[in-house]
Length: 86
Figure 1 (cartoon, rainbow, N blue to C red):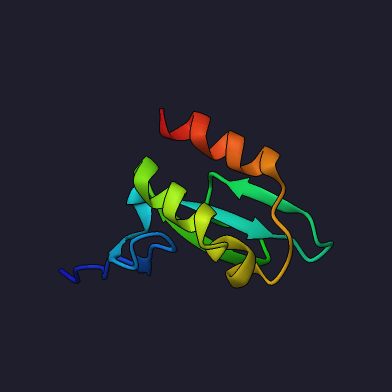
Figure 2: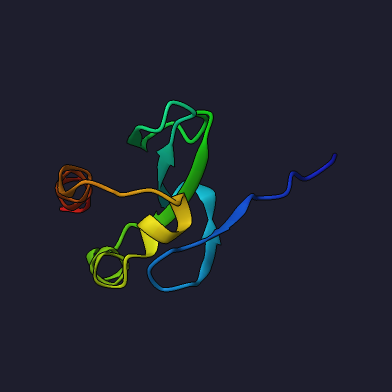
């Protein structure tokens, strides 16, 4: 039997490589809207965060989501992420 590789992604907050399933994806859609992608399959440019509030705060303070997505991320997205991590 073949074993499948686990997709690994880098967290924007702590810069550690973890399994894709352990992370939250934030995506910039082709229309330019920034959304939280719970399925991990939406089209567009994506950035991943650990399920850790410290990583979110570090990414927020250093504007890492904006840099990765190459667009402004609204405070509403950060609030939604904080609620997800509680």
